[in-house]
Image (cartoon, rainbow, N blue to C red; front, side):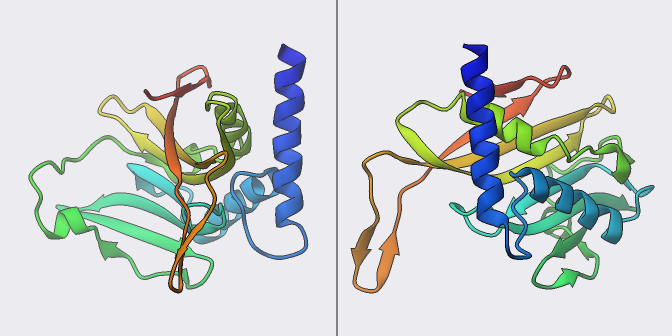
Length: 198
């Protein structure tokens, strides 16, 4: 059973690696993409900057191409965001929507340095997650991966994988082509084990 899981993870990683070879597009869910995201973070974000969240988000729901990397931090009483996207590069720091609108649920948490978030295991965590998704789903794509810091200063990991259901094809209405997809959310515990959120 263990060998089947390892073989499956290697197959998933190989398939994702092949889909990103030959161009500069970054897919965080594959090994080279994970390394590329790490390089983007090292190049564009201050490794010592104290932040409460780092988020990696795909460009589209069903294609794992990198859309943006964002860090969230506080500057006085304003919650700020620094965002990098492959299309626009590093953008000017801006106040978060929740902070700008003074939403009551917004609160400061503890922070850690940007360099504390280890993004290199992301492809393996996604591979592990795909083994927890029911077999009637396919075409897995990492949609979002978030590292956040809780009130105790511990780093938490939460991510979402989108998938399509076997047998459900695309539908077309006029010029619009649509595809149903299903989101599966996961956490990573302190020991690095991935768990599906029911």
